Image (cartoon, rainbow, N blue to C red; front, side, top):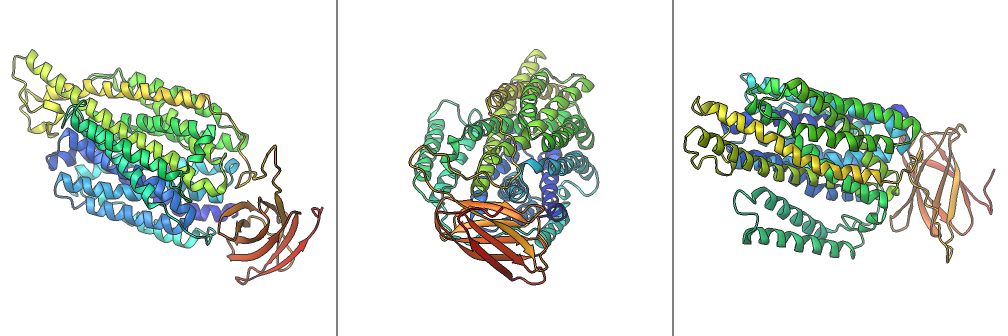
Length: 610
């Protein structure tokens, strides 16, 4: 695809990303108001966030695997529909259980959006060239995260009410759906589909049990109890069974062989810690500013600007430099230092911290996240074959979301317990009975309904407890620094796929090369044509793209009949059959852009044509 064609397709992708980010940022800033209206508690506040993270985490690897088997474009459109439907239902929720259920449905669509955008980008653009497009993604992220809290605050403070926080993005979602349908053109490989439903079910069940245990332990039942043993035991059995199944099926949801790659394993570990620090540390910022400092939702959104701008500027700037140099590790190491440093500084905040100083701490966290988030996915995509792009990208996103879900649940439990302790200590100091209302941090969020004498006590308790949540997030973020430090830097390739030529000691397996040119009907070379080579079973063997001279080169590790698919933005995909043997093969294609048929000239030679 040419730069112009990529930008057209990118418009739909970025619109869908904007919808997902806006929906999240708008709602997150309105949550204190929503919970006060629906009579929610601290534990339910956590569950509104955790429900979305849980379902998006559990479904992310499934979306990724499906993208290796079905049309990436169709799956992305399905994800948009599911996410939008959940948003519409969220706006009509009449109780906290209803809202949590609809947020869980939103998470299913969100899992597809956050996994598939990386997969689609990888299918269109070589790793070395992705930096220039990362800038567009960073700009969309900045617009969504800056405007989202502001829009959410304005909606909550306006006569429209908080329900419009869920409905305001629906028109954008419809536009994104239509634009993707008209502009995104990716090859669809016809292959025998074998979905590992048992492995997917066990994986989702194990992760769900683990996250539910983290959310309920310490509040509903003690951490050390028979209930904890049942949840943890069930999760371990389900996950162990999932590993057993994944090693024996033909198309595993999470290919365990990917973990033999050192870069992949370390990137997964770093993403797990980034998710915990990012979601677990930042999700309580709106609560801090509105409850502890008494700001309006609009004002609270403005206070998070330092982190948002730091993230956007760092992500965009790093992407441009990486595209020119091909080096990612310096930025990841810098991010691994800045992220825990900013979180450790945020661990010092209380209900009276200087807000300018706190803005500086948030900027450090934002810059650290900007250097890490997209680059961890990029280094993984740079080291795996195109046939594993969907699975590998979704696994990294899966573990980042898993870290986020676990972080929100665990840090929410820590915050709730700390708030209860602070309130009890303050009331005791004032000579007043603490009562059972604050036990477990389950008190209501409607601070204005409390007696005037108690409001400062509750605000101070929330403000002083927030630093403890950031402290736990900071210790977890140290794992990110250690992981990226040991990642071996590999220069970003300029091709869509890795070099599939095997390097073996013995015995030697012959690799057959396929080389040629793609020409127009008038003999002009066609650049940017994507060529996909598959075997007769539908297994993707290699992927490449023609250069300025129309030349391409692919390779296969087995002889026999293969299928060559040529895709250009100006015509429908063309398919031809090639017979590969033990010697290199020259195969030219003549594409008539005025029709959907291709004229093929094939010539077999014992050596490459010069």
